[in-house]
Image 1 (cartoon, rainbow, N blue to C red):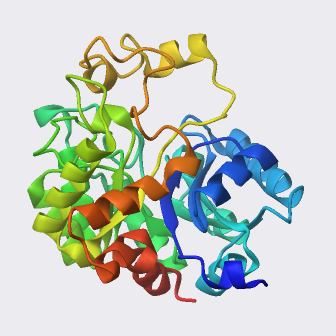
Image 2: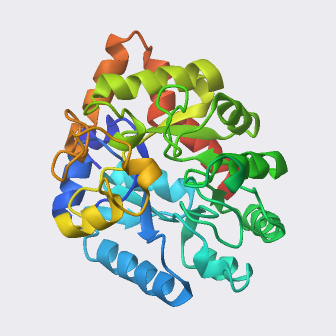
Length: 336
């Protein structure tokens, strides 16, 4: 351990979907990120694919021990930070792999999975995703309640980022431990179905959890390509409503993940799978210009903290958003 590593801020990225390569880890470290919730299992994966993708992620991290290592406890996360490598938290943005039997979650826990969402933008056995609006979102199911109980017993953090509004509130009301929106913004600032209302922000804070303000452009601003200042408008609102102890940060920058233009258009383009999420954006939203204009790579993350300071946030407040709030939640949920 060198003096540079001793003096680094601890920064946790609440959701990272970038590629797993040495070059990407270099960009992540340049951005000062100490640990990240990695989407190791893709949202559409059933049981077999989930196991294969998890093994692929583990192999990729194991191949670069000087850049990254998997962490499953708070102690391991802190040790990775002291070494100056990225602590990779294995996560999943859907629970299709556990639909046959929620007892499968125990196996995934043994394999290192530590943050999981009940559903993505779609409906599954546990509830409804963000693309279901109003009465289309019928909320948590009995299977979802069983899933929640199992997750809390195992000490896997429940993430509601992609859940619909009613489904989110139902899970929050049923929770006995802190829950999170790892990567979502304020619905009051940008009315994306992926964003969370003031009621939900207060509810997640009441569980002791947090909401991670996210730089993913379609949740930041619709009419024109968003900037860090637009992102900070969300951060300001989240802190005003939920309190500084319950707001964090997430990048969700799909950098170097191997997705070309045709795949992006099919999934996330204006005419992609989720028209009420990405089909409502202005003409600025095209492949190559679909990220924030002044924050589109992990190496640029320090710009956020600089802007927070310029807006008058104290060092203590910035530290809570960087990692302090995440550390409190992880300690309570992971129980180690």
